[in-house]
Length: 316
Ligand SMILES: *Cc1c(COP(=O)(O)O)cnc(C)c1O
Image 1: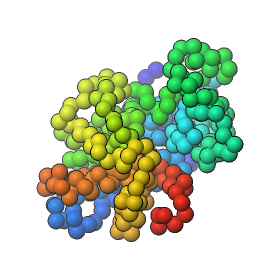
Image 2: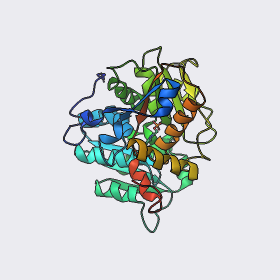
Image 3: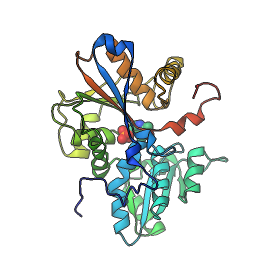
């Protein structure tokens, strides 16, 4: 199949996803003036209130394939709090595709808000033990899915696939009006990061803030996702801002979220974008960025995840 390198409006219809909502906001702060840098944010979170902004881009080419298929079915994987599954369920319902979610772990007595949303969006959920889930890439397991669910388009967990990266590259088109020196993003599977690398100019620096602890395989992931070697001078990985690991947080992180909201009216989520923002601010304070740097931070969404926080912890 030939893939065009532009957003297909049939795949992301503006009735559901208004890409023009993804505005760029420049932040004003004495720190930035003092350090002579400029900091802007690409508000992918404004594209949809529940669906993370980067996820719909990663889904783009899979949705296109499913629309062109006769089975009109997408199957994917995730945990009980997976932003990816929620985005898949929503996009499929918007496009009248069937969706199947294979969920890690036995079915709990009460479903997470994320999974409840998936069901509301018409996703059929199948729960499998962690052990079986770990073997989900095996051909035996995939054959059993074929037997159970028939023909489908399979999206690996988190959209971790070359097509996911190609879709994420479409995000860079939204930055084309300006030559940013640095593009910063929070990373989980690194699929969004790989897409940014595909779309960016060779002289732009790309900064990845892994939200998981102990990430050492980013180069390998980029190679798998893009077929290209990462250039260490282009890609920088700031691996010390995970706050203890995936979805871990402390008071400092919550305080940052509240401060950024008060000062800039920018809502952040504690799993991804708050960690990225903390890293960027810390780097600015420590003179990591040269004077004159034009920094763009991707607000990749994920705000619905804050619902799992105790009431009153955050002020927005
Ligand atoms: C999933 C997600 C990411 C990470 O994207 P990857 O492509 O897996 O690296 C970043 N931010 C938010 C808000 C997300 O939901």
